Length: 110
Image (cartoon, rainbow, N blue to C red; front, top):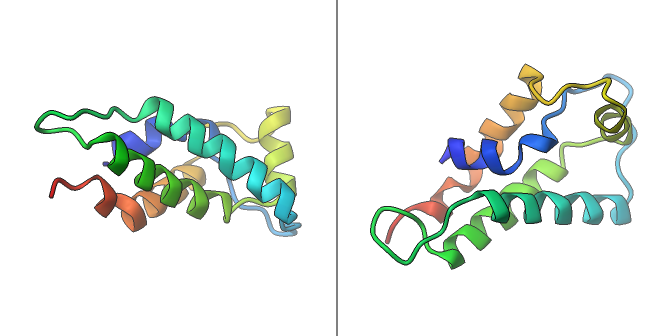
């Protein structure tokens, strides 16, 4: 499950910064929407055995993108956009693991 989230949200890997300005509600919604679309696009769905169905992927990506978007600051978003914060930053990977752990139950087969 972590692999799905990492692939779906790899563009969002960020490090934490000391003096962080929270995203406005509108900025948060834009970022969450971007993360959601990226996650859905990259997380495989199937009606067959062994992979989550489309509804499960939608719920998982909604949860994970919301949790991940809530960890961003304005400075971090700008850091990623300008290339000052790299996608493979280990602190960003930790955020993905935490979001995946919090939302992984949505990908479990029932």
